[in-house]
Image (cartoon, rainbow, N blue to C red; front, side, top):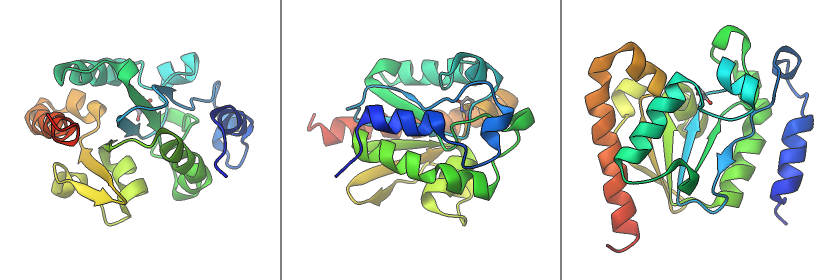
Length: 187
Ligand code: URA
């Protein structure tokens, strides 16, 4: 039997399985359409997300929202979450044990949403889902299909804010996502 959304959110909110909960303000489970065809997975909450309890609401979130619009979608038609649900101190990369502690929640979210396409934003999401050998510069832009779900790894929006030259390849990846959505809906 699969867990319900209400139970899952309760578990995520109460979780103390790693040290991150003690150092953050709010837990950021994720948000969006619980039946979305398209899902985004980022790394972990930053300062703005930690303050508001919502994923991707800071500068990187603004850019992600624009990119979602650029492929003709709205944030509310997608589901957005992170590998870890609590902010790592000073936005450091989550440790392997922190990602492991949160992995069951991510799996449960994917099982409940049942998206057709999952966009992996950056190295941490790529590694968490596709394995430790994942390298974003090498592997981005290439579809990976697992159990009927299509994964598109691409750069994290924060990386695009730091390095403008990554915007073009990221845009190519988003166009591929747009095409795949059309293909899968038989357009
Ligand atoms: N970066 C992430 O990876 N996730 C967020 O929610 C915000 C910034």
